Amino acid sequence: MKQSLLAEPRSAASVLRLQFHDCFVNGCDGSLLLDDTPTMAGEKLALANINSLRSFEVIDKIKAELEQSCPGVVSCADIVIMAARDAVSLIQTGGPRWEVKLGRLDGLTASRADSDAIMPSPRANATTLIDLFAKLKLSVKDLVALSGSHSIGRARCFSITHRLYDDQTVARQQDAAIEPQFREELMRLCPVNGYQNVTGGLDSTPVVFDNLYFKDLVVGKGVLNSDQTLYTSPETKAYVEEFSRDEEAFFQAFAEGMIKLGDLQSGQPGEVRRNCRVVNGSPAAAMNNYQN
Image (cartoon, rainbow, N blue to C red; front, side):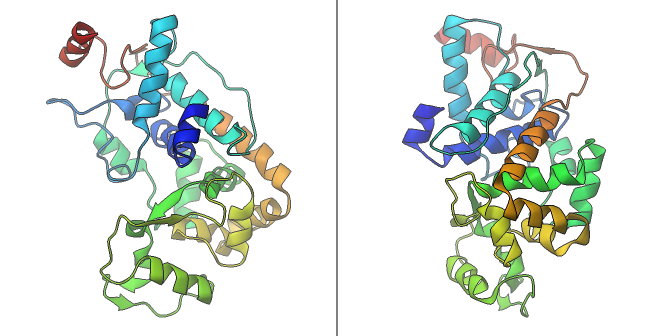
């Protein structure tokens, strides 16, 4: 992870997102990492992931080195959990560190349909997010703290422009939740009919894990609707205010939330994959073994 961050600082946020997108869908089983097959539509091309998730090669590299020294022992699911923790806690990023539980098995399949059904939209409001987290036995405090993962990373205009324009062509009437000058910044970043894959920082310090994300929400500078709604909603506002004032409280709550998120399991059979992209014994796995 140190090597990855030095080569590409943005990989910290990318790897951190992998834990969320894996664990939310049928538990932390590495299913997100599986490539599509002729008989399985995997999760990489799900609506929340296509043209969005990245840094799969970071997990591949870690797995390859582990298989060299400790074959068949460390699952891809556990690698995602450890890599996400390190992405936050390494000195380049500056966030908290926590102990992770190990021993997960890798799932034998993946489901694009399940991912599409559960992963929240950047347009989601606080009520929708609270209900989703409750289904995963995660509290309102967990929701707000884990949303602080957006302290690092960037968002595509695809996830922003609906706040600015009607049908991508006409500017919306002023949204009171967006600070006016910040709205102008977003409109310059994401103009009418602009390229939807242009990215902007999710907070004022997108490569540093800190509590500026929450400070930005308090002054109306949340990039995504699903972020700003945490301050405008009475159910979540108090936690946003607390974390904006007390970075240590945010760090502690975030670590606790990540441990709870890592506990999500499907209860389905699994294995320790040799290659995170394919199930053991599959034709693709056999070809990979032959090439190695």
